[in-house]
Length: 272
Image (cartoon, rainbow, N blue to C red; front, side, top):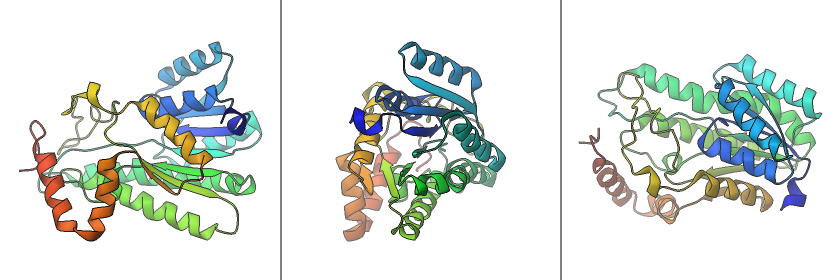
């Protein structure tokens, strides 16, 4: 696999922690030239310094994916630095935890801006290069993009939107050799639940799940590269997720109740 990714130029958004950081490190370890993007310049600088200490190649651009200008600049600066672009990993994301009855609609706007529009903006400016190189366009998603998740209306809506967007990009480029993949990890140990927005738009601050028992970002990162190597279309990383995606087409009401019960078990769950 290292030979496959050697000297490939990769952009990873949301790369300052969690899955994004792990994916960036995994590409660098496999010989890629990686451009990390996120809002935390200090954190990005620290990660890039650590990667370079290992004699691997990485750089960073401070990027707010809700800004179209930032996303365009990210792609332009990547080309200035490395000459081209082979792979785009749309990983930047934000979650929420609130019942729709209670939520301020600004929360849904925020999630769509980060999760959906961040993917659209980065893809818009990266796509000509990806098509020219017959590269890979990847969206890091969730089972919430296959079936609605109670207490996460904005999150599910944004992930469904990403799926529809990437599916359409794939179809429009069937003759161009572009690889498009949606990868859906399970609950992964990261800061996403800490930063998840509550009903009034403030951060949750703590996780309702035992983070130590969750999927590791490094495990997800390895599957991102495997999925690209195998030219996967959709890759769901848990059996629960695969069964959800399957059964929602066969017995959707049972899936509704299963997800309702699961989410209602969380501490201080908004699902009542």
